[in-house]
Image (cartoon, rainbow, N blue to C red; front, side, top):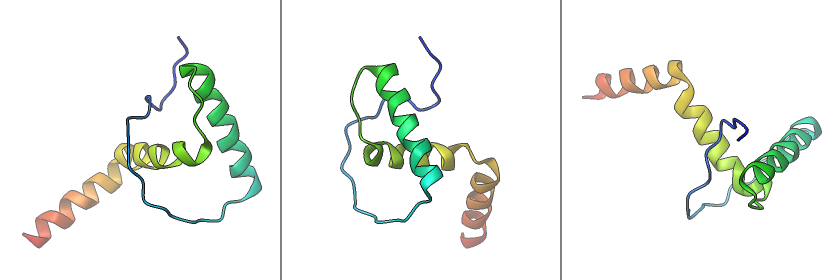
Length: 76
C-alpha cells in the first residue's frame, strides 16, 4: 500500500466556509484528491478533503501546539 499522510476520512458534519485560493494550490489539491481516491478506492471531492488536511496540518504543527498549551496555562 502507498504511504499517504492523510488517513481515511471519518463520517463528519461540516460547517461551510468560503475561501479563495491560487490556481497552483487548486491544482495541487486536485492532484491530492486523485492520490487519496487511488489509495482508498473511494471518491472524495477536494472540498471534503480540505478540512481533514487543515486539521492534520494543525495537529502536526508543534510550535502551534506549544503556543496553544502556553496560552491555556496563562489563562488558568
